Image (cartoon, rainbow, N blue to C red; front, side, top):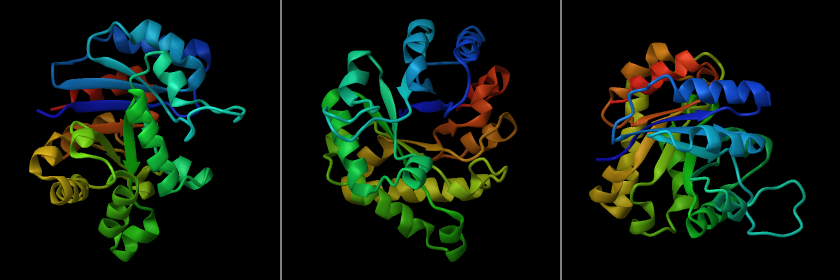
Length: 253
């Protein structure tokens, strides 16, 4: 049974005190975390030690970094390597978020390098894909998203992709208040799974957790997560409010 995941992406938000308060509130809110449910907190780099300390021992919780560099080590001032994350026992890292692609010009080749380093270093990628509004309006979102997957992931083996985590982000629905309908989300998630099935077979495809990442809220989480190929969410703004995010966690199937 593939994991059902509520992943928080705090982005560049919260002071140290606010981050500690939020983490503690989430860990003590008694969310319904069962064997197939997982909560991942994607926190800014400075807050990783705190998050590991507060949430690390809480059942069903894991910590993620929001990014890593695409080189193993070297003279790259200000960057953070996979090796550094692994040495801190960080379990996950978000790779290829639309903001990284857009603002920092991360292309398919760079993301493939990051994924390779993550897998070699024992840190699990949460690989983001998804289309902007112009692509959705042109009706070419399936081809666009499939290209993102093929160019950055399809050099991997079936074993490496078994249990992998994908986050589908309709970019036009991130921070805009717009949300893809549950039917639109299911359609794209099913397509993504079919792409993996075509390349690697149904067993691998059915093991992959595909998260929806576009303005997930407490009000729409149950409907979204109720779709057969939507395995949870990568949550931005709503993950900064303990009560809201706890409701999202409890909406996992």
